[in-house]
Length: 83
Picture 1 (cartoon, rainbow, N blue to C red):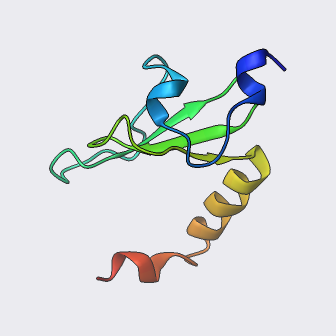
Picture 2 (spheres, rainbow, N blue to C red; picture 1 turned 180 degrees about the horizontal axis):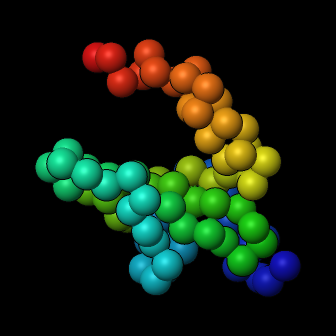
């Protein structure tokens, strides 16, 4: 683990993670409001809001991301999109 990885924490400014490596895997016709992800060197995943790239980053372990994706695939988050 590098020096910077030790100082990565949930809610930190996403801009502190650098501008390289951010992806928008779920972008679509939503007016440019995308969730962006970044794979960190230690395997964790950072998420940020594309319209606020300096705002807070949420940091998740690979296991947390896998559980979320599995739940979404099973329809457990469908209620979040119904408005």
